Length: 420
Image 1: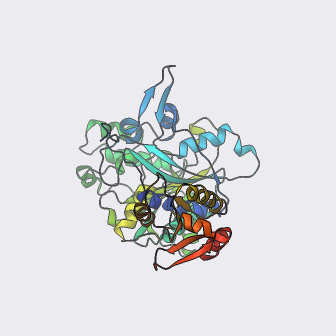
Image 2 (image 1 turned 135 degrees about the vertical axis):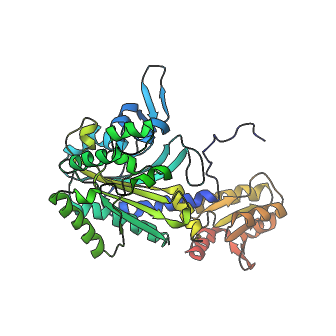
Image 3 (image 1 turned 120 degrees about the vertical axis):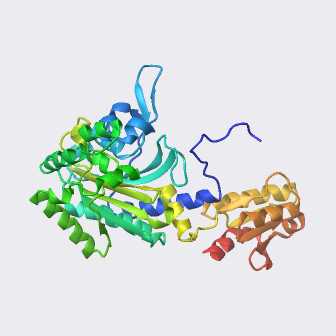
């Protein structure tokens, strides 16, 4: 027994469960790959200021949850708590926005880190798949991303999720709303930390989950009543495009999301089977983020979907994914000469794309056949000295139990045809 354990709030992905996580990642990425999004991968840590400026100094992520540290060289870094700021930083650094083909459409997959109180559906290390469309202001782009996320979830068989939709306005109309909201909030009975938040970003107070705060927010000004005509028209176009695509959504005027950079369209995917941690993903438009981190004006939109939360949603709906067997053929040699010959056959099978494993360690026939059964292979390929002398191997169908002799020089073609 190892004396070491995974850190609190983290988890290890191990077979066979890891196969489900991989399948979820691939299902979320598939519609993106089919829609012009290219893969991007960024470092697991960044300059701490990238997140302080982009995510927002008043957010819980930056003030309470970010893993920040100083290197031996004096650099102040942070493990990435989210993906958007890192992806935008990478795109700006590589000048992708200057290539003349906007929007720059990128997708990513990776691990993220937040110091939170561990509970089911909320971990200190978690996995997300995300997508960003950088450099274009177009309601069709917002709608596209929501539709692609909806498509990904439905391809997994999920049905009991809801899409919440709202508009947070822009730099023209949000300041007016901000002032009205601050006036309302200053009269409430709130703690000092929350009062400081009122002055930095009052919209964050609306996202406070504490019941004692939510009770006082009844009657708070609603952003929808302050939207300028341009934002109203933009939001209505997003709504109409979603309706035309047959994607159901719910208008939620209180939806804020937990990051400061959002403007206009904001949305969240929630699953009612997950209890308090009901959000499985979300995103929105962030037209000012590029300028916040020192880049040019680049209106953009994106989302991130939680792989961990999506797996929990599948479990809540009782969905078991139809995953391909990791091993199709399991080779069992009996004797040293048969071992060398059969290992060559295994190598050939793998080269032509047949998933094949081998009985290593010189086990006897009984133990090797148990290993073949545990592997989930459809066929066991047994080669003994007598078989070798006759130029055949025994091919056993692990489902039916039927066994037949197959010529050694036709094994590869025979197995390929049977598994086709």
